Amino acid sequence: MNITGSAKLTLETGTYLIMEGGLKISVADGLIIPPSTYVTVGGDMSLDVRKAITVETSTSSGTPRGSLIFNGSSVSHTNHGSIEVQSYISGSAGTNYYMHFVGAPVEDTTTGWTKKVRLQQFDMTYLDTYAFEWDATVDTNTGQPWVNVWPYWYEVPVGNGLTLSNYIAGTDTIIMEGYPVSGSVSYTIRNVTNNGLELISNPFPSAIDFDAFADDNDTYIQDKYWIYSASGGNYITRSDGSGGSQYIQYGQGFFVETKANGNISFTSSYKAHNTVNFRDTNPNELNMHVSGGTIGFEDDLYIRFREGASGGIDDYDAKKWNSVSAGATMIRSIAEDGAELAINMLPPEYLYAGETT
Image (cartoon, rainbow, N blue to C red; front, side, top):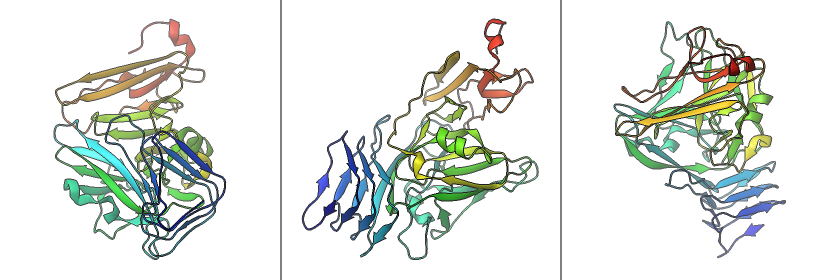
C-alpha cells in the first residue's frame, strides 16, 4: 500500500486492516489507527514523513488502544520519518504515592539510538514525575535496587521497564515518536540472590501474548508477572494461566521472576491484537474481587486446584505484593508454610478436604 500526496486514511473504529505486502507513507497523518482498531503489515515499511502513522489510545477505562503489528524485515525512514504511539495512563487510587510501569513501543529516530529511546520520550514533566529503573544485580537485603534515572537523554533500551512515580493523582497520555522495531528484541536477564526480579516491557506497538512469551523463555523466567495498577492501587498478578490478562498491552512495563542469567527474546510470534483484558476460564478456580475506600482501591485473589501443586509455596504460586499506599484494601491467601499469596495453586485433593485460607 502506498499513501502519498493528499491521500490520508483514517480507519473506522473497530475494523481490521491486513496488508500482506509492504506499506509506504509519504504524507503526515497518512494512516490513523483509532482505539479498538487493528492494522497488520506483512512486508517492509517506508516512512518518508514525520508522524506518518498515529496509533491512538482511549481515555475510557476498558476501551482497547489502537494496535499496529509490523511483521516485515526492515523499516526505512527519510525526512525524519516516524510513527506516533499514544499510551493513556491513569492514577486514581492511592493515598500518598502513585506509580506506573512503562516501556517504549518504538525505537528513537535519533541517529545511533538503535532499539532504544531517550528518557525524554516518556515526557516526565506533565505530572511532575520521577523515573526509576530496577537494578536486578542488587541484593535487596543489603542494597537499594531502585535507581533514579535522568537526564532527558538517558538511554532506555526497548524491552526495558521503567517506573514513573509521583505524589499526586493524575491522568494523561504519553506520546512516543519513533518507528517500529524490526525483527526480535533481545534482553539480558540477571538472577541474583535476594533479588530474582527484572522489570521489563512490551517493545512492540501491539499487545503481546505473555503466556507464549513466558513458555518460550522458561529457561530464564517463571511463568508469572506483576503489574502495578495505579487505578486500582494494587498489583495485577498472573501465574500459570491464572490471574491477570494473558495479553500485555504496548507501552506496559511488568515484573518477572527470574530463574537464571541469560538473554530472553521478544519475537514477532508473540504480537497480538488482543488489547482488552480477558482470560480463559480454568476448571476448579475461585476468583475473589474486593473493592473499598473512598478512592477506589481494588484487589483480586485467585485460588486454583491443579495437578502438581502443593499446599506450600511453589513455582505455580505468585506472592502477594502489598500496595504502595497505606491503608489500601487488599486480599490474600495464606499457604501452609505461611507465605502470603495473590495466586494460590493447590493439589486437587484439597478441593474436598477442608478449609483454605
